Image (spheres, one colour):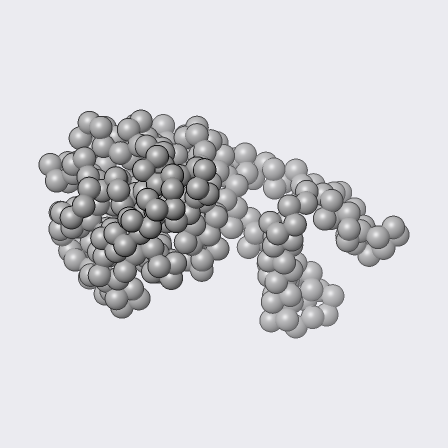
Amino acid sequence: MKPFPLLLGVLAAQSLPRSRLPFAFRTARDAATFAAMSGELTVGFLGAGKMATALAKGFLRAGLVAADRLIASDVAAGARQVFAQETGARAVSDNAEVTRDAEVLIVAVKPAQVVEVLAALKPEIGARHLVISIAAGVPLARLEAALPPGTRVIRVMPNTPALVGAGAAAFSLGTAARAEDGALAQRLLSAVGLALEVKEPLLDAVTGVSGSGPAFGYLMIEALSDGGVAAGLPRDVATKLAAQTLLGAARMVLDTGLHPGALKDLVTSPGGTTIEGVHELEKAGVRAGLMNAVRAAADKARKLGQS
């Protein structure tokens, strides 16, 4: 097996403009030389639940890793069975087996189990490993304290739409993590949606916006559907229209790059129907309510991280 830093460079070379590539891949020749090595990257999941399965399927769809280079562990036989069926990869009961076989370790167990799991694997983890945690609320300091000194660690805040390839994740690098480790994390996470690097103190705010945000979105879809039913639409028609409308609005923001306020103004004709609805939303305090919801969720995340 070739040194793992070279494998990090392979994926970074595939995802970054040449001017931003790690030093070993500044030229097209360097990238081509090592491109054939990408099949040697093995990704292991500690925990084989829904999020781990969704990530693995995204990696496979994007061609980042082959099924025979994926492995997951879980104490639950049902979770192992589903992971194996949906990915065609190995699923085992022993965490140590994953650590021995994989260079990238994605920690996907429940937050309360993270420190215990990593502490048990401490003798198995070495310089060749990159540890990526998707456990909500577990800070980098706690992750690093449970691992050998100098272990490269990345903390990720994913969200549940990753299950359908539409996730919005943010990640932060630990003290020993390198730029190419971040490039690899971004490449992997981008397989199931959007991935942005932020400073760790901002991850609580990310939790408020994109971690908890899907629930706020579902509430809006449900409310729009209720309004449609109140106006005479059948429930199934109202719900589909509401969901597609928010999906389309989100795509407009992302694809046009215009400010949401500018896009709102494009829909609100003078004296028209939309401005009447917007006026009612403003009277009801919907804007302030959503802002308060994000701040409350972020504050709660901050408190959980300190406990």
